[in-house]
Amino acid sequence: MKAGPDMAVIASLVGDPARSNMLTALMSGRALTATELAQEAGITPQTASSHLAKLEAGHLVIPEKQGRHRYFRLSGPDVAAVLEGLMGLAARAGHLRVRTGPADPGLRRARVCYDHLAGDFGVQMLDAMTEKKLLRAHKGSVTLTPEGERFVADFGIDLSALDGTRRPLCKTCLDWSVRRSHLAGSLGAAILSRLYELKWARREKGNRVVTFSPKGADRFTALFGTKND
Image 1 (cartoon, rainbow, N blue to C red):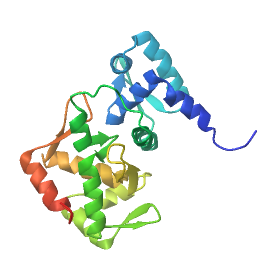
Image 2: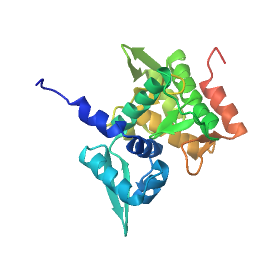
Image 3: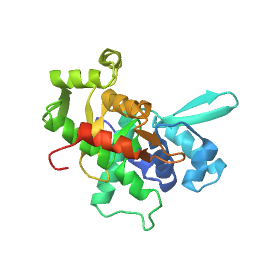
Image 4: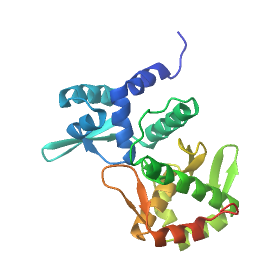
């Protein structure tokens, strides 16, 4: 038997359709109850509890107790990144749902990927920041340039607060719908939070769609526009 990480364990946990739907629901970054996750997966609450116990034992979700309620969330952004990558692989390989929901166009345009912006808007933002030399891409990784540090500060984000976290400042995440990368890491999360604060965008209730106001979309494009726009 070969030593090293056992991918088969993770694959078996993610591979079950019900668990896959539950994990996808948690890609919103929100904590959900077993009942809510059961509804997302189309299963009974009792079955959902059994699945959640397996996901918790596998360290893919973590429970949080608040009053009488018990909530579940993804155990970290690395889990979200793996799920997003698997969605991209499934799309490229042609494994798509037969039915598309009403939120699908919105999800492709702009959505939450755990706690950062994904979809067309997310990819556009990373492209613009790289093109304007705010980010430097090198061997699959991205770093913030001095110009980028000034840009982020002017946008109202405290970089020193982000540096104090254990999470990488800048990281790329493969976008399942565009099949290119968007910006993740603590900076990606901070930018999305700032978009909410400025009221350029808001989260849609009950799904991962991020909706931009007409003014917010214009300001976003002015800030993160590329030569191809």
